[in-house]
Length: 173
Image: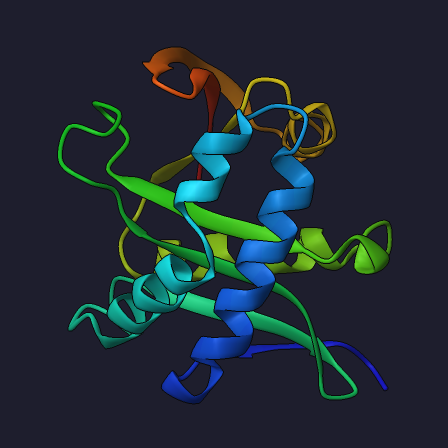
């Protein structure tokens, strides 16, 4: 069966939250302090996705997409307006792009990324950005392969350790 991308609905909250939590833990294990990762545990992710999917902008300015194959959830993508002051001059953001490791290397991440970008363009975006940990070499290589331009690096001191992240940006028009 061909993998398909569809809009996430409230009924997907638990599966989306679990995938987000599990894949994030694995992907960021070597680049984000464990205590920082632990704060955004599964209960946090369940609340987060419940709020995201209930946001009145959902379906207009915000999207959450699931990538599934044969009933199994393989990936998620979410995009929309960025927070105020997030990255000046870049008002749109790809909030999340997570793919289970077993699904990587099949072009599925590229498909999910492209669909998120198309949704942002349909919402009026002319550019967007995303953040990833500086030490997440696999993701950084993927984003650079997709034409992402390195915009900025930020360092934040946390009681659990130093958090370094980078922003990549794309123009749509």
